[in-house]
Image (cartoon, rainbow, N blue to C red; front, side, top):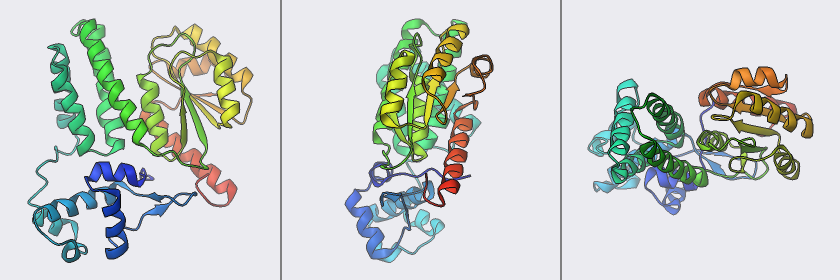
Length: 311
């Protein structure tokens, strides 16, 4: 599977280094070999971010970068004194623990604690892990607890506001690739829930697409205008609370206004059945991980057609 790529600004935030230091270390010591975007920008992988963080920990303990630049991961870990700030690698237990802590905090209206949990996670983990391993499971859990009555509406609003803020920050920090294909992300008219759309937008940005995020609740005509004006190749829509029959009507209206080759993608709990009723042009990849794989496959197809380059 293709690794997600990050621009140097996002790498600086995730590693704790300045962009200047990253460039100097790269030029003087050859510690990284980033790819280049079509526009010439450096693109770094998760593995390279982790190496930078390990190098920074060792430097913070007094070691010279010139002496440790060629060391392998195990030696850097020893010199850095262990990854003291790293949370456990995400697995069922650690993910569940983070989700439980967050839910407990918002249930008791401790918004400060809940916000601190998300802020810490955003520093420790990659953008991809934040979207797929933290924020997406949180949305599912919050929705389930609210539906079952174990989380009151006020607490659900606190949780939603904090997740929206964190997703918005994440989306702003991800790169906008000049020359890359544009993905328009929104929700159809009548759909007020935008958190799923935020995460879909971040997922597309992580895969190098240029994302035009329009916010929620837009009529088909406005979505069509934005798509045509931006020369977008994909429209990604999130449907959570909108009645299925209304969602079908809106999707059909969008499809009528935006002809092929623009692709229409829908996500949400009833996405598969809505797509089946709306017509053959509507694609329902599944969860965010499936959407990520769909985006990767699309970029590979377009790259093959163009004879090189990402798109």
